[in-house]
Structures are given as C-alpha cells and as structure tokens.
View 1 (cartoon, rainbow, N blue to C red):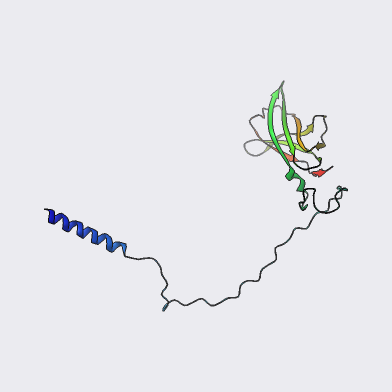
View 2: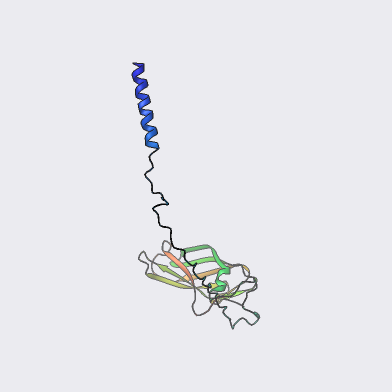
Length: 177
C-alpha cells in the first residue's frame, strides 16, 4: 500500500512541476519580430504661462504680485486667503439665521461681499441672504485673522437641514483694502 501511495505522490509532483513550466504568455522572438522604425521625438511645446492681471483698485501694489509673493492671476486670486469655519444655520423666533467665522490669512484687510444660498434636493435655489459683519455692513472688511459674520435669511420654510453655499458677490471682487 505504501508503494502505491509513493507512486501517486510522485506522479502528482511530476504533474505539478510540468504545469509550472508551461509559459503561455506573449514573448518576442527576435528572428520573427520586426523592430520598430526609429522616430524623431516630438517637438516640445512651450507651456502657456498665465498673464498677470493688473488690478486697478490696488494702488499700493506696484507689481503683479501680492504681499505673499504670489503672482496675481485672475479675479479670484485673493479668495484663496479666506476660509470659513464654525458655520451654523439656526432658527430663532420664526426667523432663520446663519453665523460663521471668516478667517483671513492675507497680511492685509480684504474687502468683499458674500451671499448664502440654500438648495433643495434637486439643486434648485430655495432661499438666499446677504452676509454682513457685526456692524451691519454688507461690504465685508475682513481683517487678518478671525472675523465674525452673520446673515438673516427671509424664508417661511425650515433651512437647517438644507444644503447651502457661501458665494462671493460678482459685483465686488475680493481685493486688499
């Protein structure tokens, strides 16, 4: 019985070794394969460089660079220095409000206008409001650091569970004061 098991194990081992030696993948045979024709490398195309935007309202800026040394490209350039935190939408006495903190990371005061827009599940705007500072101004003067913002949204529906966006007003770009 042990000779029979030894023969079966030997036969199984030989089969496993033979199947491991089979190579079914593609391979190049130099006597049959035609080498590719040499080609010229493509001419490098120069990458377009953005044109700096001269902002007329910035009298204290004599070049096309901001105070952080970044090239001013486009009207949205100074938006990169502002972010928002602690955004709360709540209802009180039948009215809807938004409180937030805008953080200005630019070395100077930035001036802008901001709107808040609410959307339903289909993406349709259902309510909006203008954002203001503590002193009630809609033209926001964002000092370096944290700035408290408010908005009152006129609506007769609950917005606390709706999607919203804070959007800069197209009438006033974000610019240094």
